[in-house]
Figure 1: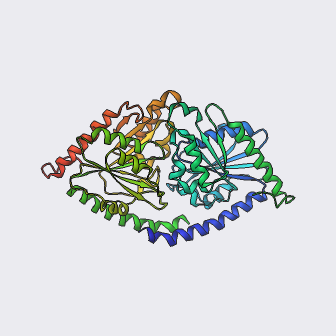
Figure 2 (figure 1 turned 60 degrees about the vertical axis):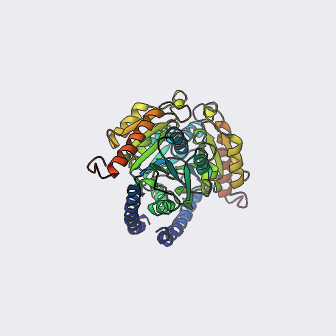
Figure 3 (figure 1 turned 30 degrees about the vertical axis):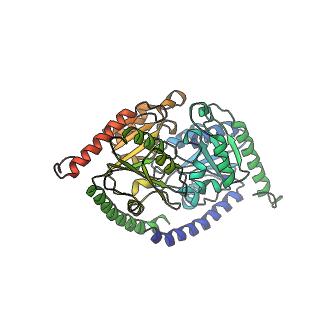
Length: 233
Length: 233
């Protein structure tokens, strides 16, 4: 049964990749940095987005695409309340966003004038790793109460990351979390990965993430000018 | 692209349902109660299984099928150390177990003489809801740090449950978790659902779960005798 699916899934992935390239071209033409924000359910993607908007929106114009597997606007409402444009995408039960959904969401956004587009993917550590969206960077929000073994159990998603956040470090005194074991697992899969332990609840550690993100956005604008086309990704 | 997938997925689901019925018949013939244990990554499925083995293995003979999306034996090792037979199923990157994988795992187990088979599904709140395994009861492990909005965001999995565990209640003092909001969401989707708030870490609340599970196993043995075929599900 599983083998029956493979040719169809391969065709879908190939078509998805072509559309993801078109999405990337639209972001680059508008000089917008696109972030694909990944996590398991409840790790804190929306909390991180709200914190990021609050910290950076004076300097950066930010919009958010909210992916949900059900027709609820809980996260989109929080993002709107924080002051950013939010577009809700209901995947209709699908376990991940794909490039078609993101392309459709682009039509509900004004890309020109934006600096940063954050795409909050569906809460899932498996399926989203297989579908390119056209964004520039993959960022995962892990969280302390999930446990330190997640890199070992979900290697596919960790391999494709450009940055890793470890949220809820305020809970470290109350749970069994072996940070060294976690970091060793990450290092095997993705050596030298940018790593930001922080707490969206208390604010501890968030500055390093904000600085990194601002640098990425500035670098992207610089590259997109064509004046420094050989620099970075 | 999404629509291209539908006919193939429907055929797979229909074939899966037929094989799930065969799995169910094998469990019933051996008078084994099968539990499909669901959760997002890190909610505490394995911790609950280990606690359950430790509490009930004098009275019930328990075996476990461990579903993982990667070839790691972290959970199977914990279950074996707790004293139960464990069969590891690597889904090869797939986001859920299916009835074929469970049927194959049956061949590595001796069902005769077992009372309880716990199938630990892949950590995922979406895909496992669509694939019947042949087990008798669906049990979800939610957890406090995931947040109280999960029933609203992942309604599909909550609708199909026979029991709901809320793990990590020892963290309630340290996180923002609105228990009333959580329970209202559950009640809308699945009125009267058996609900067990507990902490696998401290042991608080685990007795009620153990009592419920023992009753289910006893009830199942009674029904499987044929002496009470009209009783229960």
